[in-house]
Every structure is written in C-alpha cells, then in structure tokens.
Length: 397
Image (cartoon, rainbow, N blue to C red; front, side, top):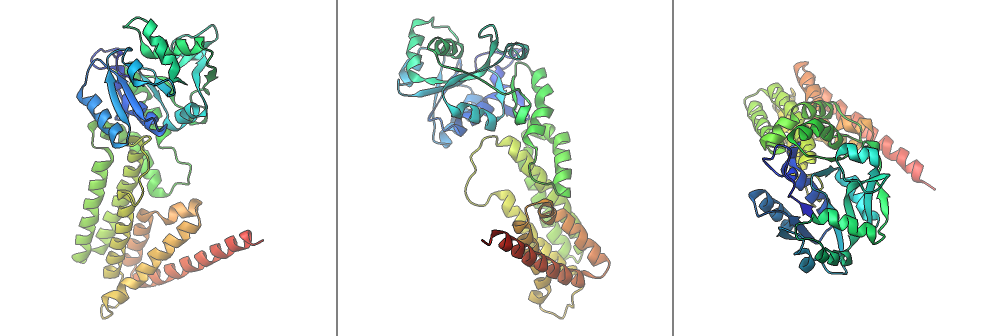
C-alpha cells in the first residue's frame, strides 16, 4: 500500500511526488513493491492524476493489479484475511535492495531508535522507538479499520493495530550502514539535499573500474541530476553515443580512421554514463532476458572499431577486405575472451573501448597499425590460454 496524501512543505505537490534524482518517491516505493512481488498495489490518493496513471501503467505492465482509494474503508473489500499487507509511509524514500531484504524476512513493524527517528520526522512508537515507515502484517488485521474514523490515516492506523496485536518490532540498521538509504522526504529542499548522496549510493561499483567508467562515474555524479530532472537521462546519452558511432563510420569511409576512433572513444564514455544513469532511472526494475540496448551497442561498437582499423591500419590495400579485417577481429575477440575469464581489474580495463581506441589511434599514427593488431591478438591469445590453464589447475582434484 502506497500513500499520496500528505502535502509537501511547499504544498504544491504531495510528498510522494517529490523527485530525488529524477525519480519520484512514489515511483521508488512502487519499485520496492514490485521487487517484493506484490500482486495488488493499493494507492491511497484523493483522486486519479497523470502521475498516478503512470504508476498504474507500470504496475499493470509488471502483472500487478492497481487500485486507487481515497480513504481507509475500501481496504476492507480489497484485502482478504489470508493476504499479507506491506505498507510504506507517505514520503519514505529508501534503497530498494535493503528495503526488500528487511521486508522479505518475516512479518513485522520496522522501527528505529527514537532519537534517530524523531530527528528524521518519523512517528514515535514508544519511549525508545520511532516508526521506520514500513510494515508487513497479516491481512486479517485490516478488518479493524472498520472500527476507526473514516478520515484516519490508514498506514499509521494499521501500524498501531499491528503493535496492539503483538506483531513484533524489527529494528532497521543505521542509515548509511551497509549502503542503507532510509529517510523521509517532506520538501523540495530535503529532496535536493539528499540527491547527491542518493546518486552516489546508486552508482557505487563493486567491480573494478576501467578508465572510461571512472570518467563516466565522475560525469554522472556531477551532471546526472540535471539530466534526470530534465527527463532525458540515459536515453539522450544512448542516442548521442549512436550518433557518434555513425559519424565514426562516416569518418572511416572518408579515410579518416583516426578521427573515427576518437569519436568511438567518446561514444564509449557516453555509453558508460548511460549505463550508470539507467541504473538510477530503473530502480528495482526486473532484469529482462536477452540483450539490452547497451550490450548491443557494445557489440556494434566493436564491429565499427574492426572496420575503422581495417581501413586505416596500413595493411596492404592489395589484400582483400577480409584479410584486412581479420587482425583487428582477432584482437577484439581475444580481448573479449580474456575479459570474460579474468573478472578483476584487468578485465575492466580490457573491456574499456575508449582505452582500446586510444591505443589503436596511436598505432595508426605511428604507422605500426598492422603490427600492433597482430602482436596484440597474439599476446591476448597467450594470456587467455594461461588463464584457462591456471583455472584448470585450481579446479583439478
């Protein structure tokens, strides 16, 4: 159950429609509900608005039913005694993975230390605890809503009912610990204040960074909020990256392969930036099977690099096109194989197409393009064999 009732401090929109990193609080909460595989989303709101319609379309596209109610009484006809109810407080903005873990464990009322909770604007529960804005309770408790006034706050009421029924309290970790992000957003000022921290949390990498990903990370943390609030985000960067790839092909056709490789390098940084922005935009979106657009772009970029290098590597023009494309093809293929085997820092560097483009530009300008492609492919093949042999020895009984 989501709530879009409480107004923001400015009063122009509900708390739930304030944006953090281009993502509304309500959209973030819906992502949590979908990640928990909720079958029905109940939205408490005064009426149907375009923002709520967007939430409805997203929920129904993921197979969930979506109901909008204006008060607590309709809950009695939507929730059965055998159901479980997950409710998120108005304005609660929390990291999806950690929230899902906490609510997946068992039924309970999530709480936090009183000083921490009251300072963040959460409701007091008892002498030592404040609410954490999230509960998971049995559906049978919803029947007691019928005994309460029609204008009561359903989520706060269900929390009190659950505590009176003996549903246990479960304390959340300290916000900031283990990546946990947990706060109430009540005003535009609060949303803008937490935005840099939220974007850093969403773009943290557990894998080693290559040079291009490092530059992309710096750019997204600096300029990402402006793109996200403008509504363009990753899509604009993907389009720009595709345009650069097409311009690179044109440059190669005009016998300017070095310029083309330079454009490829910039395009790869845009691609990495788009991947980071997409991670923020599609919070809690289930991963779709198949090849996504960014993966497909990476393969297409490899094909463009092979063409550019084959056109400008200084290989004897008397050779057939296939002969000229074979060395760069083998170089790219071997680099992909080594990167797939070695998932450490070297793997991140070997998949960095900006770095590869820069190296190939230097080889072409130094008139050693053909030699560089052959030697690079041989070295990568030897590295792949060595890594496979090392792994084989480690797994041998």
